[in-house]
Length: 427
Image (cartoon, rainbow, N blue to C red):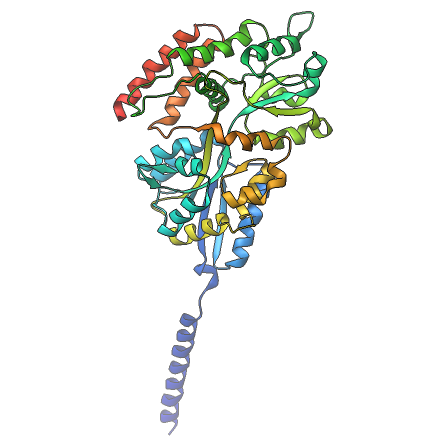
């Protein structure tokens, strides 16, 4: 009898253990079941604080998702992400500068967006931004911020020099820049008429590109097989910039980052510069004016570049990554997307049509409105193979002309020789 009871007890214990194990298997482990998404971007201190709350909001709406933000400095971004892919540690989501797109696609780094995402991009975003994320007829991501260039000037300094408004031609700009320049007893510039940046490729190349287009020139032939920027229009554009150095209205020590101190009369910059100026200048921000870059024979021109979200082709959470990006960027009539809210806080122009409409107040102030109006004549930066290498080559040779080591023609001819070799390898 006791043996029979022992066997019954053993059977009951086994059944209880089996039942417990079955229940444990049926109950999801929420800690291990979380989908983990790594997002890489260049937004750093003073910027990411406006973006990360939206990541937190999405995680509250989707408790099964965990988003980690990976900050990479802009200068190191492309090299860092390409190296991380080789090491098998790539993020799931990238925030990319449009110029890098061809290289990323060529290396097989990007996932093709779902059809629903591609439809959203075509229907809801500014055409020039759609062009920026399109390569070989294929959309590769969701456009975010649009940046173009305008003349940014100090109204107080111009007025003190006897000018009531910004220049409309480059000759007027040179005249005003010279009048606004002041030097100390040793001959050092203490107030510059103009700031032309050096060592930062976009700040060197983009303003010159705008002047090139205003002269009626182009960077490349239509098939990208050769450089055309060293023609008369490109040389004239560079001569205009070099004249500022020759005439003493600037020198290599003058930096665009000194503009907030009130010691620079004019420069050419992008709209995201607004937040920097506001924080540094405070009440003196009212001194800042924005106007078109002086026109040339082809009229007013500017250069436009774009950023966009993309997903890594080897990500194990592609579906969830695209779902998050759709939520972050999806727009509805009369409403802004979370990304649109973030970008306008930065002083950047969102690329979504409804985002632009929803932020008329922010985008319609005295600083931002000229940038928005200039989108109609802003030329998108071309998607070209090895675009970053090409841009770096241009910067280096333009700087040689700035420092008057070579003539503008010699500088651009040397750049064209280097760049034609790059183009010959790819087109």
